[in-house]
Image (cartoon, rainbow, N blue to C red; front, top):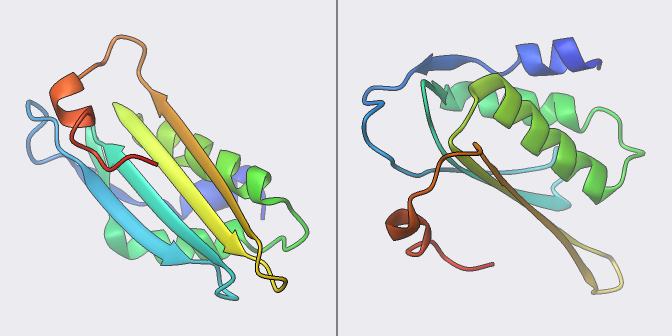
Length: 125
């Protein structure tokens, strides 16, 4: 699935209150269940329509020959670019058959945005 098709799966709604910083968390698993996905973001003008998240995840993992880093970076870039979030954090966690665990955590934010009171209360990685 190309970038335009994949990002087209992300449907949004207006943010009900753009004047308040609040955290949204969405959790999912890859279609085969091997990767746990956690998306946390602080919205700006729009919020992600929750019902579109699972369709997007299916599209993201359509190409099964990618690294966990690739999936994580793509997820972060797609959400941040489509929603223009104030702050975003993605965490992908894969447990291997041999018992090892592979995690990739990415964070990004708008250049001038900061809310230390909110961010300091978030669960640490």
